[in-house]
Length: 509
Image 1: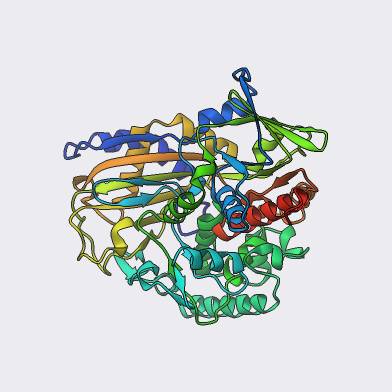
Image 2: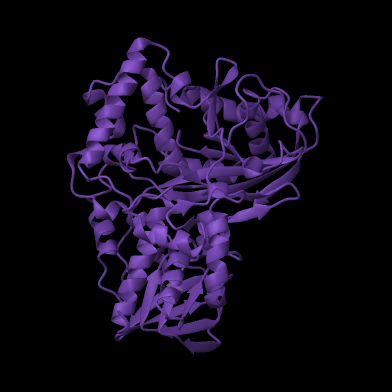
């Protein structure tokens, strides 16, 4: 975090990164902690980037439609095709497990997410999300399944040495803070009323001067001076975009607060494994068409069709839905436009706790934020259980490395060994849980160098982004980075609309 955010300075934070492992390792009371890095597919992705030698083609397969990428966009495209009665396709996934940022894990204590962990209750604009949730039994007769709505308490924040319920209440210290918080809320309501901020964003997004300036500059230009409000907005940008307010487009910053209507049907849907629950249900419906461990290394237009190479197999298709990250396309897809999107690096850790740590203040919530921390805090995988605080639990800890330029953060992410990241995570959690080291038995870490698109100033008007969104085929781009926002609803919308366009090309529209 930058100076003035209520956190630590970049210089102090980088110094802490270097020093903390050695200080922490000197503790004689430390309990041995198992764990390691969980494969994030970086090595396979780098082989594609570097155009490394690939296996010789040994067989050819004719299939009308190929989906590349098994994250939420690809799985949503496959679900849409099946719903429309079309099954003559394959989905090729680089990883050994599909799901993308909605992958999940399982321990003896609980299932848990590796990244995406919730979906806000969708409004009427998100017709595809509501259709899917009706299909999955989350929404029945207009009523949401209460067991899938976040149980109370929903969130808390640690500040001044203790936990507080909610977020805003513990941030506004003065009357001026409260006035600015209220004014900001009123302005976001006015922005919402314009209809320019929707989910999916394509339904409302249009050229705007907001896109050309950073969110920090927009706040200053509107006369917002409260450090409390600035911290809150900065946290929101780091949470959804992996970026500080200085690096986020004001359009995206406003979108965070103005895109979800306040119509009474609010709430959050979640599961122990987060959005992995959705991925599992989708795989139950489309898994027969999914081929994992199948890195696509070449896509070439051939006459009216497309040739797709994945390992030793050549697929001869009429259309392709490219649901993999767009930055890979120039390395794989013949004639793909030069993609220069910015992507945010993230670190996610799942901690197994054999007992609950000591703490002061408000009781444990689903979402737990530590004020002044460079991290985003943690969610509790067992929060939805109906048992009274199970003895063993899993915490999913999120850290967007927004304090450094993305390339530097990616290098740090890969260079620093597991035991040093482990110590930094425990040191951060000690701010709120002094005895955390006596409670944790395992920490597994996933490193995501390109976790999500970062909506930097100018992203909305980026001609390459618009060209991908409007591709005439036979290759249709469907990743959430085409929207510039890493939201489940955006990935689903892009996957479904790309599938519909591909079907039209095949004469099945």
